[in-house]
Image (cartoon, rainbow, N blue to C red):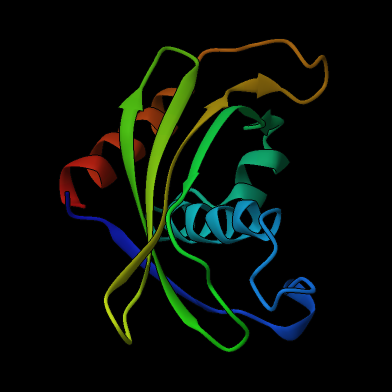
Length: 138
């Protein structure tokens, strides 16, 4: 599947005693790719939050396949898998381009909420249209 590509370099502080990127950091790598995709689609998170719209993670599934190490450059591919009435599901694939190793794959579902009340809310029409255009283009 085609995807929006985001590159990151594993920093020393992100590694554990074994020299691998600590598993918790992968969630940050995914978030970085997702926020880059949202900005590229014309709907940056800051703009949504200023409008009172939040997109918290509702469900995450991450499958580790190979370790990443300090100074590895990783390509994080992200795409929109599903757009629901009040949610968005993103798909991800993390690879190490230097040797073609597939590092991890993931899916993440975000809920659309009203930041004032915390209540679930329908995706606004302009956000839905932006996501549909992005989904078709990626």
